[in-house]
Length: 263
Image 1: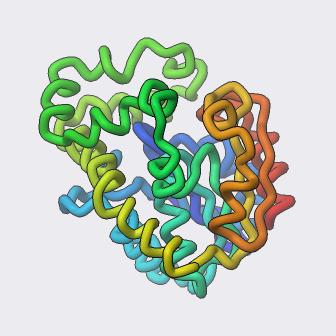
Image 2: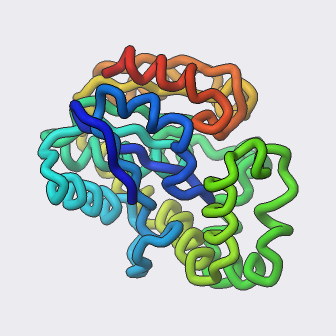
């Protein structure tokens, strides 16, 4: 976990299979007028691996972390799996979260309730990784085969320190097991929690910025993202960035511009 800067606090939550260092181009830009906190998600990177990878447990982790740092209220930015944790944090702890930015994500329940053959084909990894023990055993045989080989997963594209941290994570067998546990929780307890909230009419009450990557497939799968978000939040602005999935690494300046408009 790293923290720095001064001003209103903002918590940055990374996605799979990254670590907190994915924010290395974003955090310095925000730190001029914000206190920036970048932890590893439970199970990821060098964080503890207690076995419960529900987003509700992650949300409690972050409330305790921020309280320990002296921040009773804070903004949250979550990407990918970090977006799922950030959404749960805003739903479970509305008195803590002042603003929410969701990067390439939706509530897990919103995804799964719309699951069709296109989703299953494009996002098959959700279901593979959820077979936690089997998936981890297969990945740990050759992590580079599963996680490597993509144009953006290079030291040049990611940044040398970020790439090195990513490599340590994917080559640690316990971390791979934990990351698969995150997806297992997604299909089990996380889906249940989202369905409960939707049925009860519980909504995100703070301002929400939902950003999606124009060069990824979230918009292609769902079309009108604003209509989906209207089911979950009162005050939402939906926009796209002209970049790929890892927008903090690929479009940091544009991302920070959008975050400043939210804050």
